[in-house]
Each structure stands twice: as structure tokens, then as C-alpha cells.
Length: 394
Image (cartoon, rainbow, N blue to C red; front, side):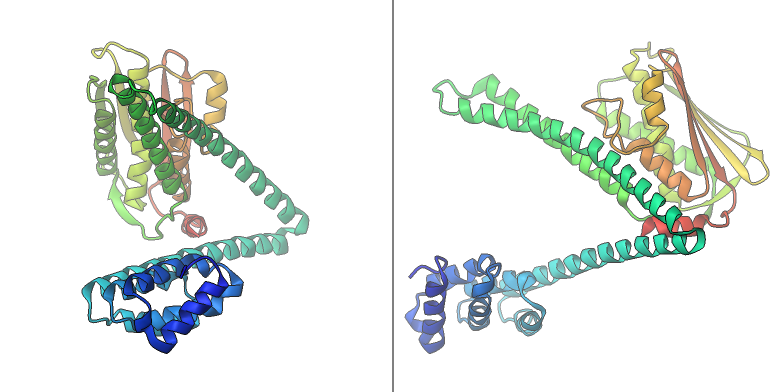
């Protein structure tokens, strides 16, 4: 009896299980249970599959019940609840753990789907509000611009991802072609595997950066000393650069804080924003091949007027040409001047986090001379910035 070749086999299995389950060997029952997830996607078999799941949830063998526990995330709500209640109280620990994992997966899936729906609904509501306040024409233009920005961002991201995948797939194809050769192995194998591992590591880095850019910005803000934020960010950045370039001697760094001002911020996000910029500065000095004795990254912070603090990150690294600088100033995620290593999300993340606090970032650079990034933050929570952060986090 084949458990997964068609409706007839499933119906036959159900008939035999409901009449006398002992006529079906337990290994076949486990195979039937394992096949049900794929069969659930076929609408003409759904009823049969659900009846089989209910029957096998009472199977005397825990191995069979464990397969049904793993099926829980895929079940319709009506069948999910009673089976979940039964299997999470199962006498066997492996079954209980499988059921609990399935419950966690289902909750996470529901939460993610709910968050996506909530986010889209709230964006639509904001466009409706914009239309009611400023007219439908303005709202339509805003939506068109939002879509255009989305298209540009996705295009840049897809371009970089395609490059990573092309390289990885090319090396894998070479490995497959060489695998049949008697001389396969040795240095060539190690080099090909290293290239694949390198590209996959970059892909993971890229995906993590995309996640950081898209994550919610907390509403909670607290008064934090500027000096602490700058020093924490500098420490994070130096550790990241040292980890990425273990053999390199880093540029000399200096920190000058002219007062003890505080800012009202979500501390982690502002530390991340500054760390991204500081890391870029150290990497720019390394890329410029400056003498370690003369390479430098200078940080400073001061109050520039009542209610604002200016943080400046300055390096004497490779600098940025005019065309690349124009693109960087647009803060479009996925655009990078560090081909093959940068993700293009560092500065956009910094700009997004700073803007959510009512601040701003400006970039000035001269090729082969260095770059200066200036970040201005309000010392108090700005009217509307909390709402901006809230809408961003949605």
C-alpha cells in the first residue's frame, strides 16, 4: 500500500485504520503520518487527510503520534485546537516536545502574518488620512513616490543578491562537475568550498542587514548622556572592524566631548546608527592604504544651540567620489561603494534611526582625502518624532 500516491491509497489507508489499525504495520502508519503535510495542499484530499490525522493522533506508537504533532502548524483551525490539546498532554516526552515546537511555529506564523496585515492596513490608513487632509491627488502622488522608492530599493537589493547567488551557484556547479574526476579533492576542492562559504556568509550578512533596516523602532525613549552613546558606539565599531580584519592595524581614534549633554533617545538604535558610521570611517582608512601611523578617525560631540547636539565622525581615508557621494546622500538601502563586502544598509539604517528621533545626517567627502559625517540630534523628544517612530515601526 502506498501512502502518498493518490486519493485511492489514502482512502484505503483511512478505511483500514478506522476498521482495525492493527492490520497496518506501525512503520506504514508512520509513513502515512509523515506524508500528510504534503497531501494537505491538495483540496480534493483535505477531508481524508484530516480524518487520517485524527485517527493517527491516537496511535499506540509514539513515533506515529510525533509525526502528527509535527503536522499541527498546517492544520485548519477547527482541527488544530483539539489535536494540539491532546498531543501537548501526550504521555511521551518526544511527542509533547514536537507538539510544543509546532505550537510555537504556529504562533509565530500567526504573529508574523498579523503584523504584516496590521502594517499594511496602517500604511493604507495613513494614505487615507493624507488624502482627507491634502486631497486625493496629493495622496496618489505620495503613494506613487513610495512605490518608486520601493522599486529602486528592491532593484538594488536584488542586484547584489543575484551577484552573490551567481557566484555561489557557479562554484557549486564546478564542484559537481569536478566530483566525478579521479583527481577530485585537495587544494582545488578547498578553494571552491571556501568561495562558496564566503559568498554564503556575505548573503547571511546581507539578510541580517535587511532585517535590521526593517525592524521596528521602539517607542520608549530615555535621557542618555551623549558621551556614553558615542563611546559605546565607538567600542562596537572597533570590535566589528577588528573582527572583520584581524590582521590589520586600525587607524588612531580620538573622542572629544565638549560637554555633558543628554539626548532623549532609544539608546540601542542610536548606538547602532553611530556605530555603522564609525565602522565605515575605520574601513575607509584601511581601504585607503594609509600608513597606520597617520590614519585617523576623530569623533567629537558638542551642543550647537539650545536643544541640539552635533556629533561629527571624521576620517582621512579613501574618500568618496562625487557620483557615489550623490547616491549615498539619497540613503537608498542596498546601494554600496564597497562591492563584494558592504551591504549598502549601514548608512540607510543610521539615517532611518536618526530621522525617527527628529535628527539628521549629512555627508561630506573628498576623494583620496577623507570623509566627514555630521549627525544632529535634538536633546529632547521632538513633537511628532515619537509619532514618526511609531509609524515607522508599523
